[in-house]
Image 1 (cartoon, rainbow, N blue to C red):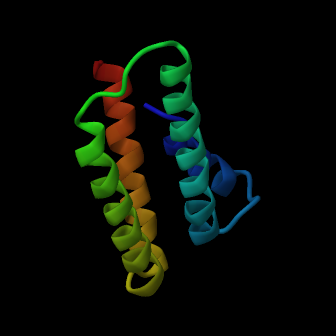
Image 2: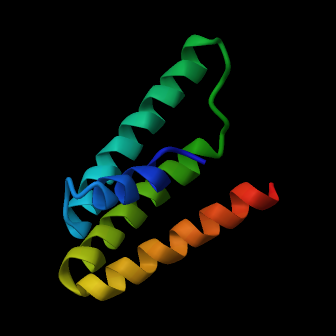
Length: 97
């Protein structure tokens, strides 16, 4: 589990950013973390799995669709409920696994 699950709530709880601003800021942070992780894999001599070619475009398309939905159609309350659900699932995952 990456830090993006914890970044947005931390920014909101500390009062540094509003809900949607925190969500917008966490996406580039997650992207940067993923790029550096991929670079680490390459520099360590490991190869990239063949599924990367399939998953990478799907992730980009999903991120674009999610951003459009979040910015245009979801209310502040809906965004808050979705974030709470994601945090709840992440918490359960940490406790169970």
